Image (cartoon, rainbow, N blue to C red; front, top):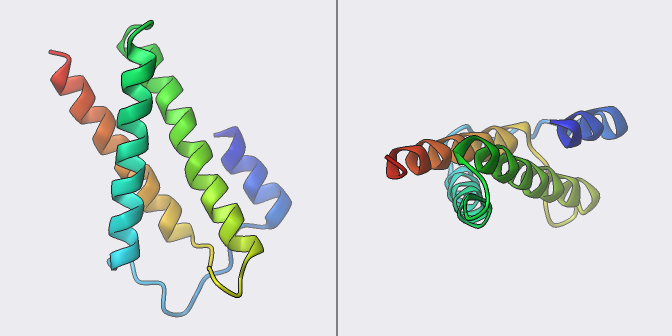
Amino acid sequence: MGLTLAFLLFTGGPPRRANDAWFARDKLLHFAASALVQGAAYTVFHRDARYTVAAQRASLVTVAVGVGKELYDLHHPQRHSASWRDLAWDGVGGVVATIVAKQADR
Protein backbone atom coordinates (compact mmCIF):
# COMPACT_ATOMS: atom_id res chain seq x y z
CA MET A 1 0.00 0.00 0.00
CA GLY A 2 2.81 2.37 0.86
CA LEU A 3 4.54 1.70 -2.46
CA THR A 4 1.35 2.47 -4.33
CA LEU A 5 0.96 5.73 -2.41
CA ALA A 6 4.59 6.65 -3.09
CA PHE A 7 4.06 5.87 -6.78
CA LEU A 8 1.08 8.23 -6.89
CA LEU A 9 2.72 11.03 -4.93
CA PHE A 10 6.03 11.06 -6.76
CA THR A 11 4.91 10.37 -10.30
CA GLY A 12 1.31 11.52 -10.47
CA GLY A 13 0.52 8.00 -11.63
CA PRO A 14 0.85 6.62 -15.10
CA PRO A 15 -0.74 8.50 -17.97
CA ARG A 16 -3.71 6.80 -19.58
CA ARG A 17 -3.10 5.38 -23.03
CA ALA A 18 -5.79 5.70 -25.66
CA ASN A 19 -5.51 2.02 -26.60
CA ASP A 20 -5.35 0.61 -23.06
CA ALA A 21 -8.18 -1.94 -23.08
CA TRP A 22 -9.36 -3.64 -19.89
CA PHE A 23 -9.21 -7.05 -21.56
CA ALA A 24 -6.07 -7.67 -23.60
CA ARG A 25 -3.15 -10.08 -23.78
CA ASP A 26 -0.95 -7.89 -21.56
CA LYS A 27 -3.65 -7.82 -18.86
CA LEU A 28 -3.69 -11.63 -18.84
CA LEU A 29 0.09 -11.57 -18.43
CA HIS A 30 -0.18 -9.12 -15.52
CA PHE A 31 -2.83 -11.32 -13.88
CA ALA A 32 -0.78 -14.50 -14.33
CA ALA A 33 2.54 -12.97 -13.24
CA SER A 34 1.02 -11.48 -10.10
CA ALA A 35 -0.74 -14.73 -9.24
CA LEU A 36 2.56 -16.56 -9.69
CA VAL A 37 4.49 -14.06 -7.54
CA GLN A 38 1.78 -14.13 -4.84
CA GLY A 39 1.69 -17.93 -4.79
CA ALA A 40 5.46 -18.30 -4.67
CA ALA A 41 5.87 -15.67 -1.97
CA TYR A 42 3.03 -17.18 0.06
CA THR A 43 4.67 -20.60 -0.14
CA VAL A 44 7.96 -19.19 1.15
CA PHE A 45 6.38 -17.20 3.98
CA HIS A 46 3.92 -19.91 5.00
CA ARG A 47 6.78 -22.16 6.10
CA ASP A 48 7.36 -19.99 9.18
CA ALA A 49 4.07 -18.12 9.65
CA ARG A 50 0.35 -18.75 9.82
CA TYR A 51 -1.94 -18.02 6.89
CA THR A 52 -2.75 -14.37 7.69
CA VAL A 53 0.86 -13.29 8.17
CA ALA A 54 2.06 -15.24 5.14
CA ALA A 55 -0.70 -13.75 2.96
CA GLN A 56 0.12 -10.21 4.12
CA ARG A 57 3.83 -10.61 3.45
CA ALA A 58 3.18 -12.20 0.07
CA SER A 59 0.85 -9.33 -0.82
CA LEU A 60 3.58 -6.82 -0.02
CA VAL A 61 5.95 -8.66 -2.35
CA THR A 62 3.31 -8.77 -5.10
CA VAL A 63 2.51 -5.06 -4.78
CA ALA A 64 6.21 -4.19 -4.82
CA VAL A 65 6.76 -6.19 -8.01
CA GLY A 66 3.67 -4.73 -9.72
CA VAL A 67 4.42 -1.12 -8.80
CA GLY A 68 8.09 -1.63 -9.63
CA LYS A 69 7.15 -2.87 -13.10
CA GLU A 70 4.90 0.15 -13.69
CA LEU A 71 7.62 2.52 -12.48
CA TYR A 72 10.00 0.85 -14.92
CA ASP A 73 7.44 1.27 -17.70
CA LEU A 74 6.93 4.91 -16.74
CA HIS A 75 10.65 5.64 -17.06
CA HIS A 76 11.04 3.79 -20.38
CA PRO A 77 8.20 5.24 -22.48
CA GLN A 78 9.92 4.51 -25.79
CA ARG A 79 9.46 0.75 -25.22
CA HIS A 80 6.81 0.45 -22.47
CA SER A 81 3.78 2.30 -21.20
CA ALA A 82 2.63 2.43 -17.59
CA SER A 83 -1.02 1.74 -16.90
CA TRP A 84 -3.47 1.88 -14.03
CA ARG A 85 -5.28 -1.02 -15.64
CA ASP A 86 -2.11 -3.12 -15.48
CA LEU A 87 -1.95 -2.43 -11.74
CA ALA A 88 -5.61 -3.38 -11.37
CA TRP A 89 -4.96 -6.74 -13.05
CA ASP A 90 -1.89 -7.22 -10.85
CA GLY A 91 -4.19 -6.80 -7.86
CA VAL A 92 -6.76 -9.24 -9.21
CA GLY A 93 -4.07 -11.85 -9.81
CA GLY A 94 -2.77 -11.45 -6.26
CA VAL A 95 -6.24 -11.74 -4.75
CA VAL A 96 -7.09 -14.86 -6.75
CA ALA A 97 -3.81 -16.51 -5.72
CA THR A 98 -4.53 -15.69 -2.07
CA ILE A 99 -7.99 -17.24 -2.30
CA VAL A 100 -6.55 -20.36 -3.91
CA ALA A 101 -3.89 -20.59 -1.18
CA LYS A 102 -6.53 -20.27 1.54
CA GLN A 103 -8.64 -23.01 -0.04
CA ALA A 104 -5.60 -25.26 -0.42
CA ASP A 105 -4.75 -24.85 3.30
CA ARG A 106 -8.05 -26.35 4.40
